[in-house]
Length: 567
Image 1 (cartoon, one colour):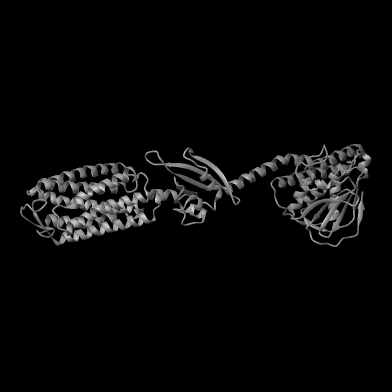
Image 2 (cartoon, helix red, strand yellow; image 1 turned 60 degrees about the vertical axis):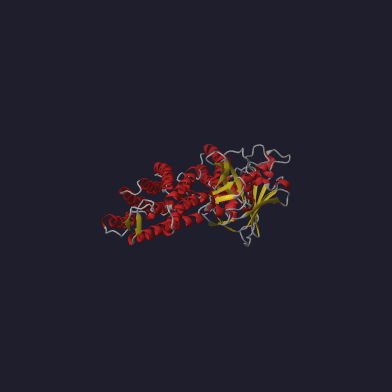
């Protein structure tokens, strides 16, 4: 019996050294979640096992009773440290404050007060010495001991419940780590129950603390306990707006955050194969299938159902640098893509801005130049007034083109007459000897300046292109007749020029498309913009004489007035 106890004592010292080393290791990582509490818990186990060993080595002496008392110091510290660690490790640190620590100190103070100052028999009664007991004394347990035992078991049960619950809700990636912590708690608890209620020659609890040391060693160095705790993981990953998926080497999803579940619209994605889980996101699945062990961290953009996602793929290695899986970070960038496209469109409009200005300002500049020459020749004040009006028109055009570049919708709508618009625009264009014929009239509700811009561009386009088809002299220009007429849904502007071939009638509204070497290809593009900004429709057809006919529709039916002409 004595020899067995000595061997047992040496084993306990080995356990104390192992657990003490882990306590120092945990203290070095006390800044991590639960690090300080775990270090204190392990220190209590060291005091516990070392005191039992010392009590065996001094068996049968008064000093052995002192070591028997010291065992309770280790027990109290270990049990209290376990409860604090469970709160911290499972994300309930908000409950750790002065009040909690004060409540935890009440029972130990009362217990040690009874141990040191109370009458014999409260904790246990001592008789002996004897060869039967582990310490060489017969110890009969008292009522305070049983109360202390119930209190300790209650704290251990509460700690275990916290850890068990967390093991059930934590991700698969860290579940083994949590189970290791749970096993390390269960071993000494089981030993305590057996030692207390069964007739054994030695206390099993200190020996099973050695199993706790082995399990925690695995949790520290293989499970990366404290280095990456589940609480820290969930706080970081779940706070991300990006979807996070962890796929193991068998292409099974072993972890996904809430954003990932929402993206896949599947709450039970964990444990599914990548093929099944990502079937609603085939573009990402294709990236997963293309991976092999040689592919390092990469980044790509995928498009799915008019949505864009930035995907970052990173390999996941264990402590031995062996590939254990991959992490997919999927961040939606649809808004960013739309802003990028909008910026590109705006830049394109700005590139066209100078060309639009140079195009539309040609009309009033030509008018102003001609009127200024006449004013100098005739010294006619009315000609100077016409020059001033041309300059005002140029200023208005600049404002309108700026609005065009910003793609603003028409908001300044007034009631206008079709005939008045046509005549006003005709006066802004250098038409030479061309003729204007108004065959109908109606009311139009729209932006006057923009509609003037529409008519000016159509008139100038007819005048400039009227000499096509083999006619190139001034007589050709004089021969051009431009007719403005009403339609059931709007109005039409036609000429007797060469017209537009049917295959080109859609593309002529595109920026840069022109049939003239001197043209800019902007006139009809501006016409379409003005029409669209009013919510109308426009198309190019053929006039009765075979020329071009621009039809604007979508205005609503109006009764026509008697025709009139101007030249």
